[in-house]
Length: 347
Image 1 (cartoon, rainbow, N blue to C red):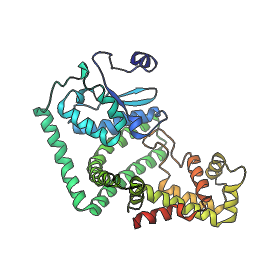
Image 2 (spheres, helix red, strand yellow):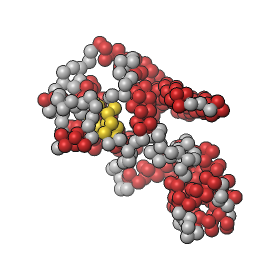
Image 3 (spheres, rainbow, N blue to C red):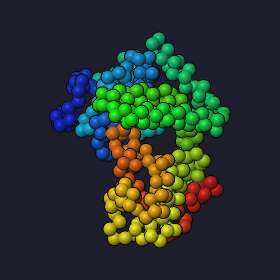
């Protein structure tokens, strides 16, 4: 019962009446575990809050209350848009593409008295949509017409942001900043993300359209879903594929070195032990060097990486060691990541 659930996980500023509708941000992101408190704050007030502030001309998104917290998970309040005919259409279209399971649950509530549509297009909403379109549409069109140029442009913007934040972090470390300085640095860093996402989201939308079309066409042929996944794995500039190939390169380096291979196959080579050895610099030389090369490029990533509070691979490499242990044991050549990538290119 909702009342019982709420007694375990009370929601702030969410009265039982009138009806309030939330959906799980964790479910959309595929995050089963709780989100760290610093990650919750960064998402609610920084990343997502910044996007909402931009889209609403600063009217919403300052306090983060549109993202409620329960059981250390985040829930987005979509009550207001569901009571507006235009907003309802936008929410349902978004969830159709992103998380149909959540949409099925919300659709059961749409006829509830508390969700009666009480508004539609109005001058304020019209001008907001025009503002968003004026920012997004040119980038969307340019991405469709000139995909390589558009990709290089947005990657350059993201790299500039990362470099600026890293310089600021290095300066703070040299000065031995205190907690208040660290909090201010976090605020400054998060305030930069919406500007980058303004450039990123339209380009992502331009890529999602062909992906949905590919999946729709593939659904009509035998094993179509697997074929579609094979094709997408072979596309150029797929950052996940590029990362997998880099990790596979590290695994191949380990396999070529007898000492490194023995260490990864030894009885005590569980992921935690290997991670500890790596952090201490205690792995065999070639394994240590290969993994460090990977970390230099991808060490800032990690499990549930959108949670800003979680350790990165360079801080907690155990999950990465699990992947490497699996890679060094691959015997069937067709299962090797580079062969999978080439199969996608051929498809």
